[in-house]
Image 1 (cartoon, rainbow, N blue to C red):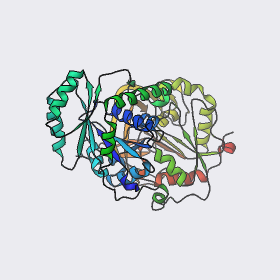
Image 2: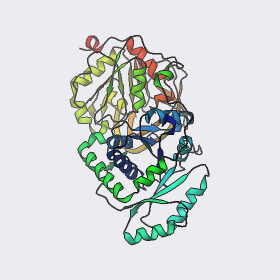
Image 3: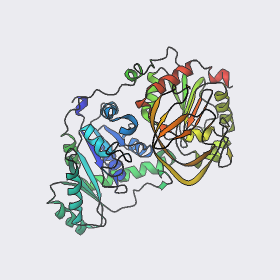
Image 4: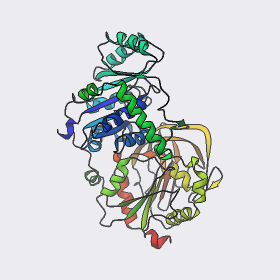
Length: 465
């Protein structure tokens, strides 16, 4: 089997809340337990669902976002992530045809399915309907002839009689029913202000939940029919994405030095795209993970720091209590070493979060609010910094219920250009801190520039300790 013909399915739904994550994660786990190497993918910018996908499959959960990375990169990124897999499963986002606001099909599950030439299996919430399910499926199947809606999984079915009525209705639709799952809350995953609770915060319970999802899917879905459907795909003509090859045209060939870049992780900092670490390594860095909740020191020899997104607001007391690490981070930033911080990292570098002292790198205070800030953004770097050259244009995503005061420093990290115009974030010395989540696969020069800056920085052992 060539890389471009990897068997694949897209798991979609008519709307959010139908059970895509339940079904997709259960399918991933069920096929993995059957001995297949399963590659997990998620449409859109979501960081949390891929954590459950990774738990189900033992492989990194990867995002496919046509807004952040561009449509032309979707198939290459997919082929890179799915290399060596027996089966690739792609969980959609929102409703099948819902994309970036006001931009047509861009970043929708339907667009990604077309780019991957993959059949779509529609997860339908059947809890409040019987014959109407056939009309709903007919509408979705006929809306875009280029989208191959090849099967349906009925979710939240109430009884044997309910299932019988649903199947009878679907017989005339021309779309086969590939599964029917009963209403069952036992295998659910808890949610809070930004969606599901990440795996890193409830690993033991998450393992149990994923196992229960796999059992439900095995009992209610025709796994053989789904696998056979996944094998009906044509070969993709694209070459797999290659981080090393991407860096050269971006002006970021591997550094002759091998600087150590520490990457924050653990329960407080769970938001990260797998490709970021791959780009850092391809640019010549040694990537060293650490947990700000547990580790009192940065990895020895740290010359650069990446602090991604997550839920620091849930762990503010514990992060604050780790005063030795906060002091090391502040000293590293003061030394001029490159520090890239996104969202949660931005809050961690502030003076305080909900009144709890943080690293004090930025002249700003942060706190939780009731207001959700959510959406895609376009931005431009206003001046040269450790992450981006002046004029670099990126697409990003904001997703938080916190506020930072002030929201931008004297030297902002970005000038947002769409859908609103405002200054955002902080640049100070080697620090680049912002609410904006950016996918570096779309702009590999960010990783190359960060590594090049780190190669010129003094190691943490001499600069901090």
